[in-house]
Length: 482
Image (cartoon, rainbow, N blue to C red; front, top):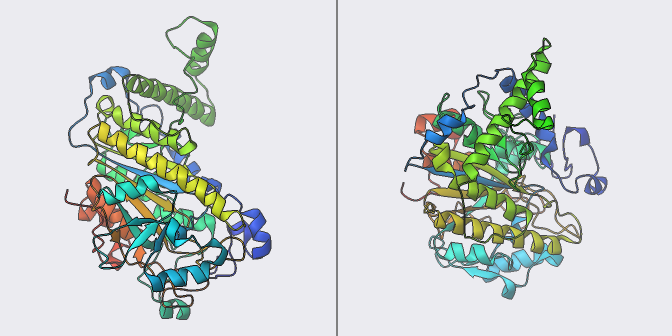
């Protein structure tokens, strides 16, 4: 079992326990979500064995007849894999706090004049600046279309530094570990390995089993993930960001040799349970692709997206949202990701410049697309990440931390605000458990519950999705009036 709160043993996963930090830097270079495969595989197997009559498989005729309602809302998670150093995402401009930032960061400190000023409405005289690459997000924030959630992370109970040091409150397991904290963020379960994600659990409660096209309620443009995996068999349907589907060449009504061979293979009954399950899954996947291709064929957007990996992902999500009328769903959750945030080395400033440029431009274009679709108030995008990073430089980059700052974007957000409490940047101060690792002052559950309530979950449903929610107050106020 990983040691809770051990600052010096920055493990990537259980397989790397005890790895010295000096060696660890070479092994966790771009921590990706591969360690989360097991829970998804178990959930997928359950779904496969459910057979071809799964309720989320709908014939094309039913799809053509379905219509999207006006009560539509979508939640979009952009997960920043590797642990985003949010200490450079948003920086206090007040002289004392900026001085603390500058001294602790040394080679990682951004020049004060380079920061993009923002004017939160809820921080009194305190002013802040965004990373110089975040020009689009600065504009959204100042227009009231974005907010920052300060110092948010996995918690099992509100925790002070004294309680952390005395271990007098329960602490999340696997602190400072990529895989454990990715799972904690995406599952909102921080005392064990989560087997389902809070996005999936919300979806299972808001989109009833048997709903037409239910399988499209959780769509991922970046592969499998824990966040959209339900506890009742829901698994995310994966769509390529390019829009190309693997079986576009196959037409079951065609007489060409390849289509005929595929149709014959799929129709051949198998006595072996797993062979038949595979064929059933393949048949469902092909039908789902045909349904989705049909829905997407009628969509168009004039918003120009950046030609980047995240730009392509968010453009596909915007197209999928544009197809909501064909799919007939009133609630959807989407998952996108951007990797490369594990910045231990001396190239951190250069990598952050590129990563934040890609992030800001893609988010800005996506919000513009939702406005173009008339859904600016009905789509909310938020970021998550493994953890924050140390305020103190390690001499090159920054090491694994705990609490970090996240972005929330959309017309439904209580914008131009910093939700939660910004940490005191004093090294070894009241919020620091070592080298500027911030004890979160907002839990993942608090942020997620506000997003879930906006999506339409009742208090009873929220309590079911987030069993530890009662340990925290509900005063974050992240979202505006419904």
